[in-house]
Amino acid sequence: MNPPGDIPDTQAFVAFTPAGGGYTISVPEGWARTDAEATTTFTDKYNSAVITLAATPTAPTEASVRAIDVPILARQPEFVLRAITTVARTAGPAILTTYSALSAVNPVTGKVATLDVERYELWNAGRLLTVTLAGPAGSDNVDPWRTVTDSLRWSR
Image (cartoon, rainbow, N blue to C red):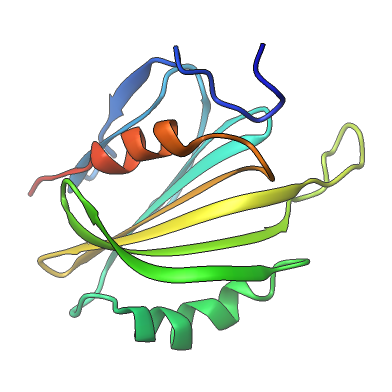
């Protein structure tokens, strides 16, 4: 039995390509999907994967993420920055920002949860893909999140 928020090791993944193309990435099968402009969100219970594609002329750096993105992220309730690092992924280097923050209020229970968040920024030929993965604090989602981020394939 997995604790709440842990994605089971038996989780199946399916390929997702947005209507406009540009990339394909694997996401957990059966998760609810919501589309809003250039952002697609997948959710299941306590977990989420938010994927956004944007045009940008230059690749992000650890310094640019710290200067530009962190002040915006810090607006989240109970935001605590853990680290900003560069990591290798199959599609190329990614700037990884790890932090914790409170979830949105659950509309049914009225409760919030502390989330551990991994935010990856991957750049290719003027395109920035941001993949934000969140789950309850203490969840062991290292392997599923690696499956998602290593599955990225750029397309035209």
